[in-house]
Length: 303
Ligand SMILES: Nc1nc2c(ncn2[C@@H]2O[C@H](COP(=O)(O)OP(=O)(O)OP(=O)(O)O)[C@@H](O)[C@H]2O)c(=O)[nH]1
Ligand SMILES: [Mg+2]
Ligand SMILES: [Zn+2]
Image (cartoon, rainbow, N blue to C red; front, side, top):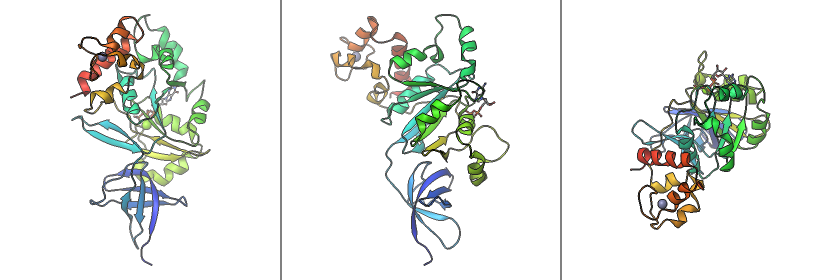
């Protein structure tokens, strides 16, 4: 038999091909066909083995969800698919830009899963906070407020306390992706969490390259205790794609149930009379800074 079919999990995807892992754990080079399209990291695919050369991807299974970001023209770009957890990594250095966390939260809520905030370089957090005048904003001063909103906020360090054990527990037996600004320490976390990283990257080294530190390709690794972890290239600015107002509002679960009181059911919560959200902001049932972030994102992302 010259060719036969197998199923695979895409570990890395680039240009016209990638590497997929079969059920038996083999890593197989694969190539894409225009008629099938390009799978992304995390896709389940059907592979047709060839007598020579890479296997052909003949089908991409329907995705359970996809993590996307926007290109420079606010079009969606799929980064990875079929995720259980999105770990939004921030750090005291580089300092998160304004609304960065809110944009990530909107993006993760749109996958239908609850975001997790990972505060890396936590061994430097106290020093960072000491240098901040009281009343200055920023997500690192609002960690307890995020916890109050119901988000899991986890502090980690690759250089000191509290280490990464808490994160290891959280991602065990799940498929998780690390996202965040360039330099916050996503790859360093991968390094800490994967004792056999060198072995795994050795197999994938054709695409990871050597000697560079900034990650350029989205790659899925196998966790030692079960589960998968995806490292993704950092961004300087995470932009949202053009979206509907409802999709944006879903990233602000703290606006519920106050929005039920809005007079108009398509209320944008900006200038309509009888707005339940603005009423809740006025008497501090919704945090003012969350509402201000919502208004800025509404201008940027909603057509
Ligand atoms: N102090 C401190 N430095 C850290 C920690 N984690 C990572 N770093 C440093 O932060 C720098 C960037 O780390 P990377 O892991 O390459 O960051 P990244 O998020 O993968 O960056 P991109 O691949 O560009 O997105 C490196 O110099 C790391 O040594 C930490 O917990 N504490
Ligand atoms: Mg990296
Ligand atoms: Zn309203």
